[in-house]
Length: 365
Image (cartoon, rainbow, N blue to C red; front, side, top):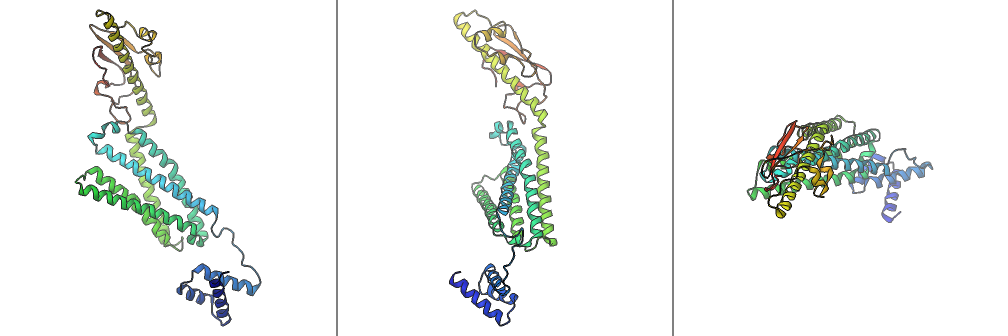
């Protein structure tokens, strides 16, 4: 015990001998600047000495590694689902308010959408579960609300959200002064402010709570859980409507493979034609795809449908023209969400579609 603690202990014992109450000493000393835990510690030592019995430790009270684990997990999952929710809404804004300079990104946005939705689907339920546990324990043990672990981690979370809002305001002001205000920019700034602002307000108000079971605390918890759940479910619904269901996306991906195979075959035919006409100006197109495979110009797998394993149709035509056909399974057109960026040349329906190529011209992509 240091000199200050010893002096505090002597004062407490002297005051108690004169009839001062614990409540009076606690209020008096804390107003004089003494930390509450040191005051309670001095009072505890006084009563332990007087009774000759150590104050028993209550099971489940105090700070522990378990507290740190729960709060760290809570804030880690909070950061995961909130940033993913913001990224998901950013993708919606880019999709609805398109920038012509980013058309290639929009055409293959689905991986970003599904990644954000997967992160939310895992992190958000875990966050709700862990938060429910911490709220229940705080209700049963009110001293948990004054836990140093809780306060430190909550203030770190507040620092992160406050920093996010400040950076967003700086970004907004910079673009405003530069004259680059657009619908996309305003909506994205508003998204960041709303998400970060809700989190900041919720955790700042929770720090001020000394009891978890008062009506205001219950209302705050329900409001935050309801608003976040509504935002997550709405974003999921919109994301599925834009990206499509997994079965739809599988059809689109298979059709992209078919288009890629036809593109590879066409390049191989053109390369054959250039080589043969260089040797003999009167040379014709290859009569079948097996010639290209045998010559090493084309892999055998590129000549077959990825699902049915049936060979693609190849038909030489008059002059330098030829035809390639494939059976497609989706009605989506290249350039739509979830498709690799192709030109309008590759439009197709759910049927056999044939494309005409000229061996002297570059293959469209």
